[in-house]
Length: 238
Length: 238
DNA sequence: CAGCAGTCAAGAGCGCTGCTCTCATTATTG
DNA sequence: CAATAATGAGAGCAGCGCTCTTGACTGCTG
Image (cartoon, rainbow over all chains, first blue to last red; front, side):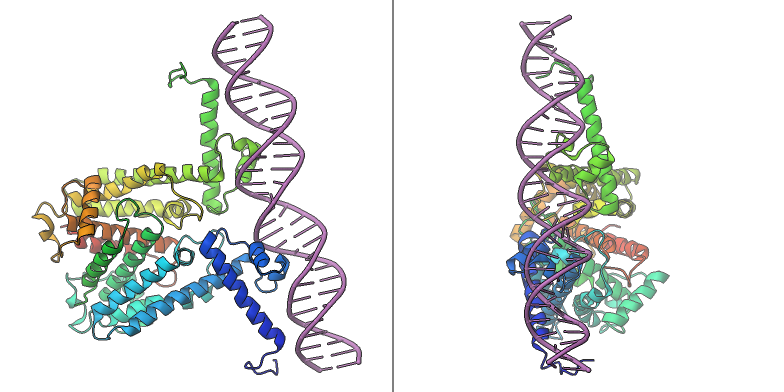
């Protein structure tokens, strides 16, 4: 119920917003160098020249600070994905798929700890709040954009490289929900294959980042490119 | 240089082995209830009725205890995979693939924290020692066993549902190394597709366990089954 | 059989963590 | 201008991983 317009905040409000940003910035720096487990409120406060207890005026707990970083990370990845999707020609489904995969992997390699924060094992007692979901769905929606033009043009699911078996009941309902959210009107089997490609994409990136590929597929660039093309065929992109 | 035969250890040696096992057992219990981050040496010692410093006689650091748990987890998963593979009929490639996937997912769902320990984000400063790799490769080798009978019978990579493009140079070398390790004689494109299926399998399981599927594919049983069949076709299983 | 070397659990203590509470100061509001 | 709310500082609590020292115990050897 403040009479102030949001454009002209009070000095205190501006200072608060500024400090909140600085705290997140410093926390992200520590996250990048020491990982989520090494993120310490006291160290952040120390670096900012304040005392640790003062930090609790801005984030009520360490988990809340982590949640803020998680949302920021989802949004940063969502930005990268949406930008790559928008830059690609709408008619070239496979090209857009390539660009999208490359953008996602590129962001992950550039921000490994932030990627681990959102796609790695969740911190034990930590339950992702509803607020993160809206940001998390953005990258999935970008993938849905590719899917929308995949199977529909040439006659529903028949364009798939192999005849797709009909979906069992529960799965049909689930894919319908997903379709409504990310690619309305897309038939269930196409959605299902897209979701399989989605899990493959992030499974590969996670394996690369988390060290499952060392010693074998170590420079994973070629394998990643190969997988992207194979999965493009798998989801029915021409 | 002890004159004792390993079968008849001294009382001290047996006591040491026993306590080492008990420590790992209690640590695994805490891991299952509080996660890796919540694993506390002091709590383990407390539960065992000893003082924390005594525990350092058995594991020089918390990381060493975690490493022991990681190796145990890889071995447990390897056991489950090998048992499932051995139980399936050798001639039925797709049946063996199904059994293998089900066994791996089943173990993961039954031991989520241990799964997160080995396939989740690695703890920051922690570098997986060489000793873990030997155990980690077992489940991959089990998957290779399925692959060995996949594309070879009907004429190399031509049995694949879609013509597989030739592998780029580096990837060809990498798949050759992998083939030697898990499925000797298998052509590169078959190996590459198998590795893609591998990343898809674990990507899906990780998504399910780490909460990326809640609200959409939440009971993931049907989707998992569908993905297994689709990937079976993808890697060329009849 | 006595003595000695090696092994062990225990205790105290260091520096760190997240978090809470109180208190003085400052900015905003009626 | 005075009341109110927000803010930062400080002290303190319980917990953590880890180190070092101390005293007791075990099993081998002279």
